[in-house]
View 1 (cartoon, rainbow, N blue to C red):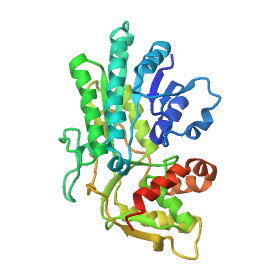
View 2: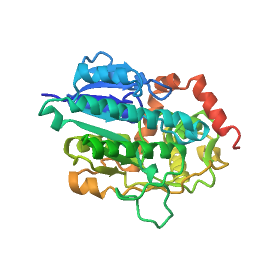
View 3: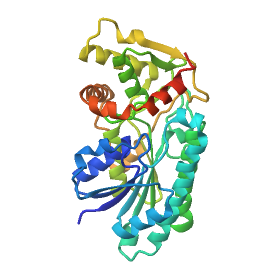
Length: 354
């Protein structure tokens, strides 16, 4: 019998990719999403007439709604993607991140725990709560430091990463205190189709095509490990199926690049795909660095590779080229997300940094 999953935040960039993969596997999905600026039903357009994808607009902090969905659909697992996730936004409005990432996760855990405790066997033993988190909870690395592993101490440096660290601790506490069968995944920077264009890669693609400046923080020397969203979601599914209860698993792409390298690569791909008489790279503009900008993230994902047999399927060069082509081919999706609110945000975050 196919599984039923309650997926929170399943209309966002990563969550929607997971939902599409889950439906391809034949799993029924109850999709709870607040549908804020980054929760986009267009990401799920292919499921619009699918009776086994039930999209519900709502907040994980709404205990009554979460309880209703649990009792009505009796999911085999809850997969929690719901989060505010952009560092720059967290610097401007940290309380919004506390509300969703800390208080929202706390409410979700409490309601799920109360429902799970009343399940009969074997449903009680087979149930899982999987919490999706980030490598940013571990802090920052210097150039020669070993990559983050699952036992790296938490040391968050931004309001975003601090709120995610708090949510991770809550999830683990519910396992230790109440024996809720949890799993935690910590991923590196994601990229791929349908990413909201406040993030680095889609922002650079769209700014380049529009002839706008390509704003790079500082000197562009900050390093990230890039993970294709499809690889991330396949790893989450594997952890959900085979992961050891109470454990965390790091998920990375084996693709460390400086921000400047990423931007220059995007410019080169665009020059091949949409030749410009002027070089896209000439649009690169170095802007004032953001506060508390972590220098380097890198993920050691040997645990998930060794214990569960997962490996990323995409190389960064191929995956990035495919991502650029997706944005070139999906103008309608882009126009639908580039609302006035998005443009106001870009101006408020980058307008004073020139």
